[in-house]
Image 1 (cartoon, rainbow, N blue to C red):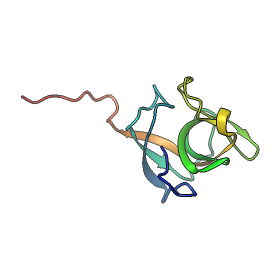
Image 2: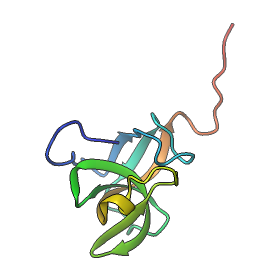
Image 3: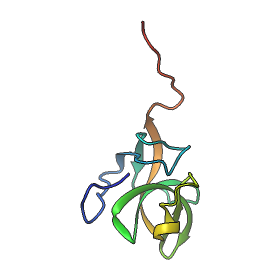
Amino acid sequence: MHADHPTEAPRLRGPLTAVSVTGPSMAPTLRHGDALLVRTGGRPIRPGDVVVAVFRTRPELLVVKRAVRPQDGGWWLRGDNDLVTDDSRAYGVADVRGRVVARYWPRPGRVPRLRL
């Protein structure tokens, strides 16, 4: 997900915030257009968590990535799609804003039905 044009990424408000995925960097886990629920606060981030974060070198860019390891007071992040390198390999350490707790659209495990 990307901020439009501000100099600083939008802040996540409240303990739960809805965000949407833009781009292919988290495929196949998440896809463009998926809607996520993000928790701010709560338990500490662990390696393997999917998080919403801001790279220190790109403060205007809000991203959804997987936490790999703590580094330099922040986190080293990777996308699940190895063909896309818009993660810590390109931008360095990130500051986590929240942890993804659910994908609510499209509904997991549901196949759309046609009514005739």
